[in-house]
Length: 219
Image (cartoon, rainbow, N blue to C red; front, side, top):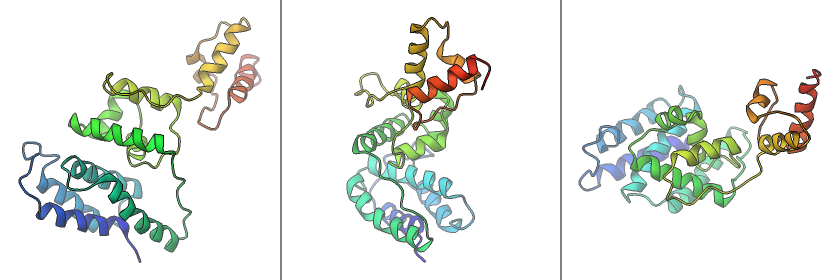
C-alpha cells in the first residue's frame, strides 16, 4: 500500500544527508539532525500517529527545506500530489478539495514568515488564538477557504508590510451592521453569546435570521 508520507520522509532524509553546510545549526528545531529525526519519526509511526500530526510534521520539514532551497515548492507539490492521491484511492477516501490559488499563495507566505520568525505552528496558534491544526492546513494548501476570523487573526500576526490577505464577506460583521442599522444595540461579540453557528458556509442572511431568533428568545 502506498504511504506517501513515508516515501516523502525518506526522500527528505536523503536530501538532507547529501546537503551542504547546515544554515540552521544554531536552531535545534530547524537543524539538519532534527529534521532527519522528525522524518524518521514519521516513518516509524505512520500507523500509530493521527494523519493531521503526520501532516504537520511533514509540512514543517518541507517548509525548512524550501527555505534552504533544497526543494522547490511547486516541484514538490507536483511530486507529492500523485502519491497522496494514490493513497486516498487505495483507502477509499475522497480527494481533498483544491483551494483557490490565492489561498495557496497565502499559505506559502504564512509558512515562510513563520519559519523566518523561528516559530512553530503551535506557537503562532497560541499567540493569536487559532488552532494550530488550522494553521498547518492553511500552510499546506489544504484549506479551501479559511474563515474571515482566522484570516484576520493571521493577518494581525503577519508583518504589516506584507500584502493583505484576500478580502471576503464576513457574515457576522455584515449581520451585526444590519441589526444596528435597524435600531438594535448589538455588537459582534453578542453573536457568540447567542450560540449562533458561524462558519464559511453561513450567509449574512442565515446569521441574521439566527441572531434575530436568539434576540427574540426563540433560539
